[in-house]
Length: 263
Image (cartoon, rainbow, N blue to C red; front, side, top):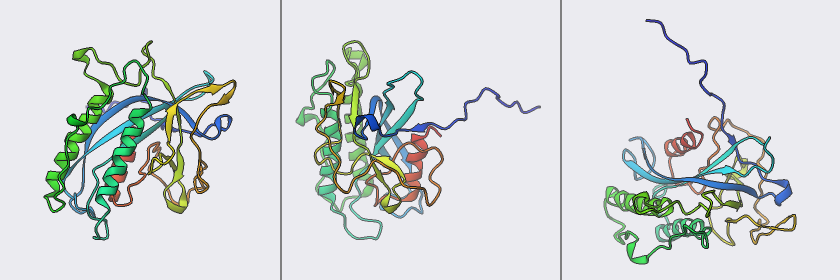
């Protein structure tokens, strides 16, 4: 039997977000989807979740086009469970890192306050995390699975109840967002990512004051939106990021970057 080659298959790479010089080097985008998923960690991975199924929550964005001729650009941000042990075997700042993870998710959530489909989070509904840091890694992964699933459903809504995604306006369009993405990956600064810490913020509704961008977001002196020349080859076409993942193994980072690039 002959092998049929699909000549119509789209094999072009998804383009990455680019900072807008006209808007203070911020990226202007729209949230398209919030996805819950799982990735398999290799048994040889250097972290406490090796060989286990690791849950994740991912936010997928597309760029706002100010001109119809502009190409489609994409950016994905993923959050993973917080390990209690670093790659070198030393204890991590688990509670601090867990708090920062929540801060990032809540900050993105807050960007849609005032939107017609915004849903506040009832503190009593949030899945709890154990304070027993000696518990089995599988127990903690199950907690993160429940937590990420809860957050994903809150963002997306329950269509059986007539709920719509929070990021949609009254006309059913995704609202425009101003996003602070910074060049990251250590000294190489290979890709754009959301900051690890919320600080003064990294995402808010896009607004103009006249023709100028109206925003309270700002770059710190150590932050830049300009990527440096590549010194090593990154994952092909990866528009996502592995920010804040210093304690995650390479197989998980690579899996997330492949997912972000649509591979």
